[in-house]
Image 1 (cartoon, rainbow, N blue to C red):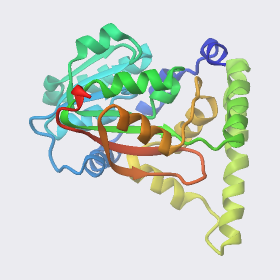
Image 2: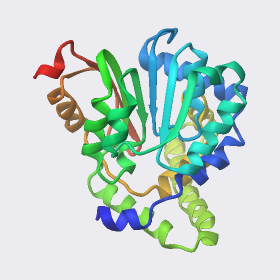
Image 3: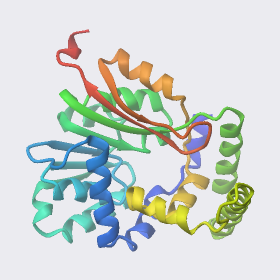
Amino acid sequence: MVAEQELKRFGFGANWASFSDEIDEERFEQAICSLKNIFGLDTLENKRFLDLGCGSGLFSLAAASLGAQVVSIDYDPQSVSCAEKLKANGGSLGDRWEVQQGSVLDPTLIDELGKGDLVYCWGVVHHTGKMREAIANVASLVNENGLLCLAIYNDQGGASKRWLKTKQTYNALPSTFRPAFAMAVAAFYELRFSLARLTHFKNPLPFSDWKKKKSDRGMSVWHDWVDWIGGLPFEVAKPDEIVALLRSEGFILEKLKTVGNGWGCNEFLFSRETHAGGH
């Protein structure tokens, strides 16, 4: 399955390039707030921040603005270009921000990156085609007493298998038909959400949910839909599987935010135990 998915890899970089046009001061501020909330820190001064799978570079810029020394990597050259452009427009913040192309599955790169005090890998490892290997590599980059933020697609069982079929269909289509397919799928689910809200005597319109998404991480509803509908490779995991895997690597779960039985990402914050490397 992984090999088949890899042949039809989704254009993550192209989607990020489109999203980059929407980055404004509000989204930037929301990204800053998101990092503060995730790591429980008001400043990242004297911290080395690794952004693994940086996408547009928005969160790397946010980390730099909070005082971190930032290293960003992404597998997709278009994503790297987006981050480089954002860095160039970031003024003095770019002085403490390095961007490079690479994969978290590349052992040479992992050896060369060096460790980080804060390692941020949001919605990335489940798109590598080798999720558990990617998690192990990412975890190896965390300093003793460092923090690791991971966001990984929730395993919904049969529903996840159906989403895989949707993603494969999207990527099998000629590129000119993909936006229409994504719009049709998104409209179907937005309608379902509206009916569910109405059933619970809530306002059926989606605008409050869309605003919440933007305020959560400064993200775009449409670009998130395209990423979700098209994103291959695609792997999922139950929260306890990730916790057990990282515990075996010497990590302690500090925070967990789940999507319950729904789709989307479960968000984890782990701390690395002192002297964990000797286990």
